Image (cartoon, rainbow, N blue to C red; front, side, top):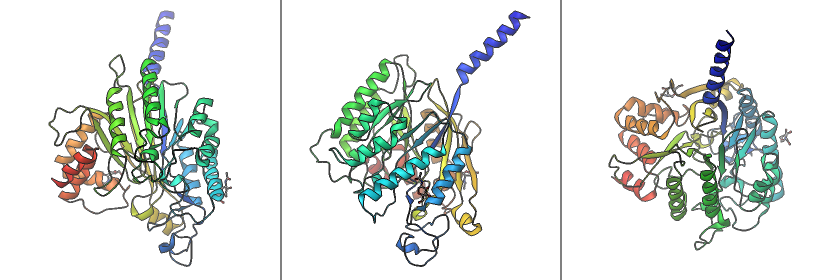
Length: 430
Ligand SMILES: *[C@@H]1O[C@H](CO)[C@@H](O)[C@H](O)[C@H]1NC(C)=O
Ligand SMILES: *[C@@H]1O[C@H](CO)[C@@H](O)[C@H](O)[C@H]1NC(C)=O
């Protein structure tokens, strides 16, 4: 009897070790606007005059009121996450105030986020292009924004990370109690729109060098690595400007070099970005060739998370709750939550609903959330019109209900499969 119960206990312990998971909340692009008011003119950022700005937000060129931001986080708190990742763009699109007002609003929104999750292990941040007072211009030299970001985020930063953020806005930290290192990069330093970085500056703030050293240490310590960036690696459409080519190239080289740990398991197990305001994903393969020969090995899936705001009809306000294994660092499932913005404004109540679940029994029929499964998913997208429609409509969490025609499907798939500009362009033009 005694042996049996010890055996049982052992079994339980073993299964705990192997199936231990944590809940990760992914939120991005809130753009909460302190000047938004209900009934303002929707053609004037919902900040002036008289018009039809809704109580909770608008699908025109407006950001969202603080009320929506605050309530969304309150709802997110009820999902009880263990870890929170915020992928940038706290601040509104239009700036009509001083730099010090800008900074105090940044502090307010950061503090609001903190207050919403008193029990989490850690909150991770990255800076978005709108989080710089001069939008898109992450400076290559010391700046108030870096100093303030370090101060505002300090409850979740080690001394080392604190100094790192002060000097360039990037850092890395382990998720407490796990072997998963979250590498928060300042992708705005590598943005094509950044006008203060000199074109001959080979490595602004030494971020590339730091990244390489960080990955090297992770490899030596047998850690799992997640990347978080505001800007997705690839393109949103053919006209869009993203990472400068040479930085994208160097980053991809590092991803390929450190894809696997010494024991052959995956080392880089996830990546998350915001900025597009849409629910998408991007594939990184072991090589960039157009067209694919079929021999490419999928290495990494970048999950592009849809926005908390509804500007320009990109998406219904949304957020994602994922579950990941602490041992492998792999995501095993996620729930996509959304609020129907038009319904909320009409009913004058905010109602959060489950849009879809991915993972084993989820809507896309994936039997896991690794690169191999997403690679199969891409193939299925090409072959199944109904799956392509689902993916297309879920990009906006149901806000855009148009049909995606053949050329729209083709474009959608090119953007997933080819992240380098030349290859993606060839695919789009073909
Ligand atoms: C942030 O600003 C809002 C709206 O002005 C205010 O209600 C709230 O109390 C502020 N929160 C913090 C943490 O300062
Ligand atoms: C996306 O997810 C929903 C779950 O709400 C799923 O049922 C549906 O097939 C997908 N959306 C659309 C509009 O097809």
